[in-house]
Every structure is written in C-alpha cells, then in structure tokens.
Image (cartoon, helix red, strand yellow):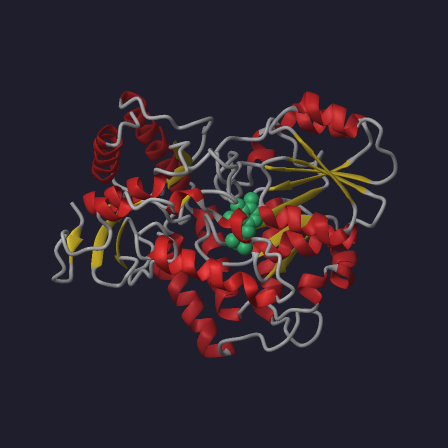
Length: 437
Ligand SMILES: Cc1ncc(COP(=O)(O)O)c(C=O)c1O
C-alpha cells in the first residue's frame, strides 16, 4: 500500500470512487479545447478552466505534474494532485533507465562544474555560450558514436526541431513513421516541407509513401518507440529508403546507451550505423540528465551550426548539466554491467506480466505499455494504482491516439526483483478489480 505521510485518510481524499463516477468528465479531452467560435483568443480559457477545475483536477482525473520531493529513484515521495497528502510510492514511471541521474560521480561532476562555471552558459552556443565542457562533451559523444562530429542541443525536443527545420525546405519531403515523437513532427511542420506519415513500422507502406515523391526526401524513424516500446524494423526500412535515394534519420532517444554491444543503439545492434545519415539521441533518458545531440558528418555539424535555429537562437545547455552528462557517458562506457542489469530486469518483469496475462502491446524493450485502451477508465485506474502504492503515469491523447490509452512502465537497472514483484502484483490486483484483466 502507499504510505501516507499526511494525516488525510483515504475517505477524505478527493480521489475516491464516488468522484471518479462523476459524469461528463471523460467525455472531454484536449481536442475539445482547440477551437472556439469567439473572436477573442482568451475566450477558450473559460470553458477549459471550468473543465479543468470543476471536473478534471478536483475529481482526480488529472494526474499529471504531481510534484516529487525525492530523486527519481525506485521509491519516491510525491504530492497527490490536490496537495492534501504526500504519498510514498514504488516508481516505475521515470526514464532513469540506468539510475544515473543520482549517481554520486555524476552529482560530483555537476557540482564541480557549478563551482567552476556558475549556473548558466549565459549565451547561445554560437555566441558566448560554448564553454570548454560543451566541447569536451561533443568530442566524447562523437568518439562514442564513432562519427566525425556530434552537436549538443539544450533539449532533445529542440534537437529534432532545429535539425529538421535546418535541413528541409518547402517542396521537400519528410516521410516519417506515424508514431514518431512530437518534436519530430513539430520540426517537420516548422520546415514547411511536405509531410507524409507511413504506417507504424511498415516498410511496405513506406514504399508506397515514397512512391510519387521526387527531390529531397528524408525518412525518419525512432530506434525504440517511446509510447509502445517496440523497436524499428530497421533493416527493411533503411533498405526501402535507400533504394528510393532518400536520406535517413534515426532518433534513438530511448535506445542510445542501452542497445547494441557497446550501447550505441538499435543502429549498432543491426550493424546499420554507417547506412543511416543522421543519428539523434537525448541525455534525458538513459543518462539521467537533459539535452540532446545529433551525430554525423563534420559537414552536417558545420551546416547545423549556422542553420539550426532552435540552437542558434537559444541559450546553451547549462555547463553543470553538460559536466554531469559527460560523467554519465563515461560511466556507461566503463560499466556495461549496468545495461546487463537493465536487460535482466526487463526480462524478469516481462515474465511476471506475461504470467499475469497483462496486455503489454507490441513492446520488446524497457518501455512496457500496460494497455488500458479505455480513455474513460484510465484515470480511475491510476488512482487505484497510487492508493495501492504504485506510481505509473496515465498516457492519453494527444500523446497516443484516442482509445490507445495506457500506463507506461519504464524499467530501470536499479529496480530490485522484489520491487518488480511488488509492482506486478499491484498491477495484477488493480487491473483485475477494474475488470481489465
Ligand atoms: C523519441 C523522442 N525524441 C525526443 C524526445 C524529447 O527529448 P527531451 O525530453 O530530452 O527533450 C523524446 C522525449 O520523450 C522522445 O521520446
């Protein structure tokens, strides 16, 4: 059970079944609040806030942004939505796949850089914001990825937006898997290139979508898809793209530092690193930091320096974070046993969920969706999980398609098998009680 830190009893909590049954709420999601017929931009605020306070938040149907008062470890404390109580929960929701966000060496490296450089870079990377620690990080990344060069961005999001906008122009074609991350979609929109989506992980559909396109084409996939936890069918997809003469890009946000013998990602696993033109990764997942990078040729690096607007016109990554990330990168290379521990935990948890007959969709990775497929029910289930002591975030539209709602388990190398047993037992009981298993 969740350990209650405040004096509030379960009966006093607003997150109860009676409230969950309060009608109307689940008939709304963000898509109801994109447009209003009024001329005033602010007119949409009233109906949105009425929904937000009157239904979503007060009935516990909005379980996002609950403030955590601990590091993202396997056991955490967080504040329940209305702030009435603090919960001690078993955490399977953080991206901290290798537990590096709170590794003592990472913290020390960040602290030393903080003492040395101060808090911020105080400038764009192309102006005064590049410090020696950024250059060291880029050099070490390029070496690790076995590429000529690597460029660091302040976030993974701005990496994709800046990269795609820098390369693609109106009249060109961005052809991407339908499940790619919002940052890739946003980069494509910003570039004003023509956009086509191919059906998720379907080389045959990519073939169709490439058909009839001419000129500059960029095909984009992810290594491991962030919401379904399945791997790209890389060999077939890259074959199709290359046969059509398109350039290729892979975002390995959830697979760099984890997949492949040396941790370089799914492209390494399939021996396709040299076949793919542009490699993207983030520091916010396996390295437990923040920021993103592009790895590729020196010529690509030089062009992005001038044209990736999200980097040119934005402050550089904090030097303290850069130093922490650099140390995390060194640990990943020094301690491959961290990856072994992660994969052994993943296999263990998959076994438990399989035995319990829980629907994990197409996942093959450390990201394991617990498919609920019921947008109306998922918040009630999330409350039950929290009451039973397990922290998992509900994932709904627009992060996934409607009726594809799920919880997303992120396994970490730092979970113990006892913790995974506990999590699987809670899930199994709660899903059974909710008639979802
Ligand atoms: C595939 C993918 N790319 C990019 C990003 C954005 O990365 P960041 O959160 O580091 O900005 C994410 C975030 O979850 C992601 O899943």
